[in-house]
Length: 474
Image (cartoon, rainbow, N blue to C red; front, side):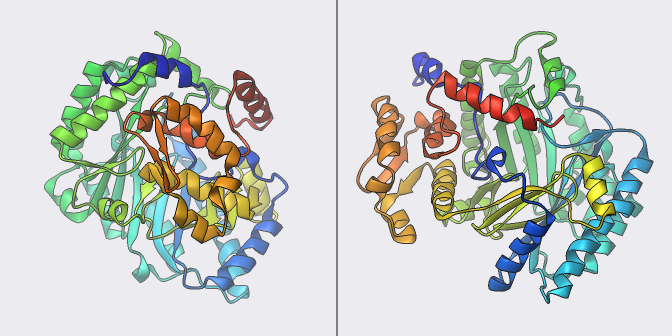
């Protein structure tokens, strides 16, 4: 951390940053893009790409308890009938609407991966989880599924439930860990001990699941460098195959309850967060034997993600750094978002009342979407490649998109000079490379290539906030 100049941290600190799991970012999608446009997109793209692998994402918007850090779309309830009603009367109908439309147009989805996210998919009782699986099995060939991931709330499962998931075809688990420090857990309203994971990740469970991911958050209230080291010691002892340490996204404009995290003191400042992120890197690599796999990912050397990084096939998206075997998403459930190749993005309604209203009227519940133009595609690839690999081969992009890079990005290259002068970027005729110190500022550096949300001044930040407030999601 001594190499990081505090003046650089002050200079490049921002209250807003984008993770670029998609580009253009969602607030720049078309809010007039509805069910009919989504169907047109499906008919435009799928018949042209019949063998392209698809990931099916299914969203469960229920949790028993509110975590103050959470940015997911969810409903906090202990009324299980809410989940049953959602599952059988709406999600099942959405599945019918989508696959009936595809069948009518002689389209079969080549589903290769599945991902159940939330909220918390562990909210479902076993019989209802199984009913969802059985429903999906009528829509496509489950034998072709390579990876099937379920996000796990460790407080709501036991060993037998994890083994049940495996019987249903699940082979990847993603645990919300965040931090093992009890005081931090109290301040984020999520208490779960290290001992809980010892009882869950038994030899039987580890034998069944080829990938076990831990999500960690950096920037939580009460976190310290010492506490982060202790959490990482515990994580390394458990030895998940993948670890995704993400920076906390604090945005009370969209999630008012996040202000609860400040009740007993402020969040760690930008310098503290970067120091803790350095600790994560050093502990996982030097003490844990993990390898870096993109901006917010680490994996054991024999994990498939490391080979994907080595082969430059990995993909950064809303689920973190993925192997890139599947780059196309079809999403089901409230707030579910997906994409078709480099051509389309789309997302369902967040609000359950609007989602249910669309389903009841026989429409797919599309909230917004966008058809990318050529400039969008070029910038999307640059942003995501730089965030994953920290360098860009200029000639490769010129050949792929038939552009003259220096001319096309004359403004951006000029703006990069400031980062270059501070030792964060090295630019040449052949490539753009983010330095070791520059990695800490990756979101700020790649933001230069964002045509819609480029942040150069405080006024830029205020303008973005103003644009987002009318679309805020509670």
